[in-house]
Each structure stands twice: as structure tokens, then as C-alpha cells.
Image 1 (cartoon, rainbow, N blue to C red):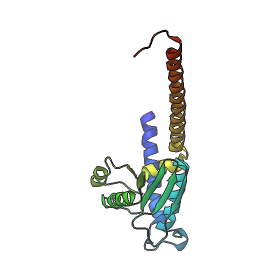
Image 2 (cartoon, rainbow, N blue to C red):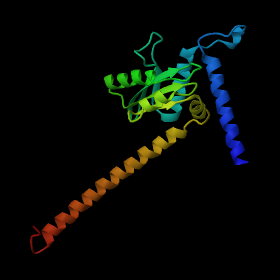
Image 3 (cartoon, rainbow, N blue to C red):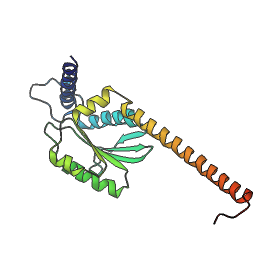
Length: 193
């Protein structure tokens, strides 16, 4: 029963990911009615920007249509600047978008980045992003993020809250340590050197 549920969810995610491709793809299929093809890959960038904002907070803005040297989305988050590249293509995405993105991350001092695609990634892309803080978001994961807004954002908020609590605890322990050291120096009849 449970495995059937997860298979159904995975099938739904795959189907919706392909639906995103057909909604936002550049070209119109032969015989496709105009009312079914009103959007384009640039509209997909706006869609993805909204999904990123609901997941991670901050402000995500698509760059101009003319192109921003391989960057499609600029995302200002609490953690810093993230850059994104969006691919609305039917085939698997190779390492090239991640390489271009990484170059721009270095130039713009970005904290991280995303390559977002309606399909999957080739192994070359997966290998390329290892250790360089680029998240590969495939179609199924994008659909999950879209259908579950705040899932990752809530985790980010919890992490920031725990980090803030930890910092306050460190401050208080530091103050307590200094108070004890002062007490020991002033109250003990001998010097502990």
C-alpha cells in the first residue's frame, strides 16, 4: 500500500514535470492550438522564481530576456546571493549550464546557485557540481517544491533559529566563564598561575 502510494506520487511528479515543459517550451507543436501555447521559457523563469521564493524566502527576480551572461534568476536570500539558470528542454541537461553558472557565482561572489530543469541531469552535471554549492533541481523536485511551498523554507528558518539560539548560549557561557574567572581571582587567597 505505502509503496504503491510513493509510486503514484512519483508518477504524478513525472507527469506534472512534462506538463511544465509543454506549458513553457519555446516552440509550438504542429497542430497545437494557440490558446494552449501562450507562455514561453521566459514565463518559466518567472514561475521558477516564485517557487524559489516560496521555498527559500528572499526575493528571486528573473533577469532581462536579453540574457545576463548565463544567469536567468538572481535570488537574494538571508544567506546571501544565489544565482540560477533555468532550462526548459526535453532532453537531459549536461554540465555546461553548471559550469557557466559557477563562473558567474565566482564573479558575483554568490553564496550558491541552482540549475533548474524540467527534466533530468546527465551524470556529467551531477559530477560537475560536487562540492561547489550548486543545487541541481530536476523536474520532479521542482514539482515537489511547487506543490509543497515552504517545505525547504521552513527548514531554513528552523536552522537560522537554532543558529541564533546557539549564538546566544555561547554568549551567555562566555559571560558566565568571565564572571567565574573574576570571582576566582578576587576571592581566592592565592594566585592560580
